[in-house]
Image (cartoon, rainbow, N blue to C red; front, side):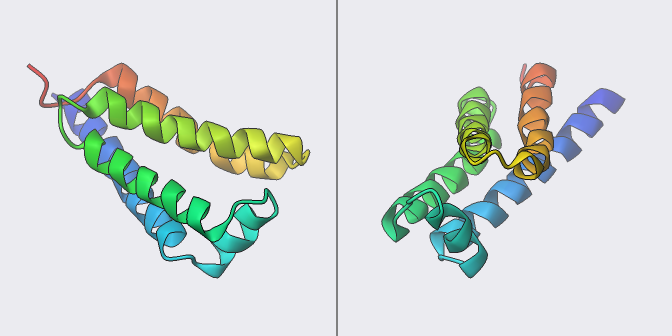
Length: 115
């Protein structure tokens, strides 16, 4: 029971962060545009990435699409990690790693409402 409560809290954190970052990308927040423009992402590509992030956050909420949403979000985070590695930006990698691990832990613990 305690594990389900902890996992529920972790899921809410992941969904909140997904919405927050996805909205920042979708709306073209200056810090997001700056970060992704150094990797030659167009504004349209940034908006698509933001929409995919928001969709993955929504998918995490439902037991049937839980794993797909987590993998989709983890894939986006892994993409950002790889781009940071191409720039030899280890600080950026270290910042993104907890979010990747959060998705992996949530997948391991499974959806709390799953039968």
